[in-house]
Amino acid sequence: MEKEKILDLFKSTGALQHGHFRLTSGLHSPEYFQCAKVLQYPQYNELLCGEIFRHFHDWRVDLVVAPAIGGIMVGQEVARQLRVRGVFAEREDKTMSLRRGFEVKQGERVLVCEDVVTTGGSVQEVVELVKARGGVVVGVASIVDRSREPINFGAESFPLLKMEVPVYHPDSCPLCKEDVPIVKPGSRKVELSAK
Image (cartoon, rainbow, N blue to C red; front, top):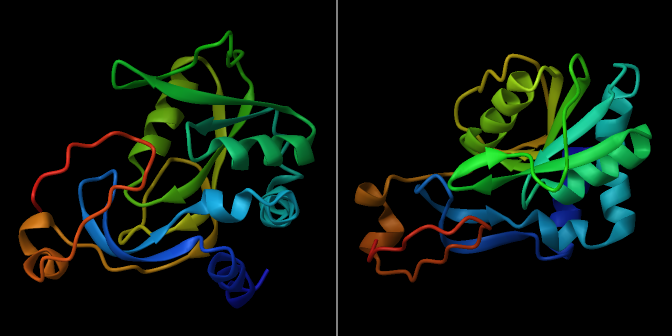
């Protein structure tokens, strides 16, 4: 799928947002990808995740694991198209864990799916969780990769859309200096300060 077509989907559904955002990482940005706005449409979720399916369908994937909350819709749709189990990891006492009876079996080949990667922290936690349970991470897929530096997850990385979006440390954020109101749109609760 061409980058422009993906961006058009994000724009037409309001998934690409402009303003002043505090990311889960604590960094600030003038743009935010709210993937849920595009993925709420089953036909777009199927279309976008179909690209991930096409990339990994010959990799003998046994299980898809996604970090909650953002990755759940991506992981479930990719698992559906691959016709394998799909589970999610969620935070329990600030640590990614498998709950609800979900498990990774010894030797299972696992694809980790996320909606948006910025620093890769949540994905890396899921990768380590899978390895600790005896799984083999064969790949990491995301709808959007907005990381500034390449991230090594120790497996094939496949972002559908690679975007360079400005991010700022709170102490040097030009939007803070202009007193633009800040929004924390992600799923993880982060304390908001004045900046």
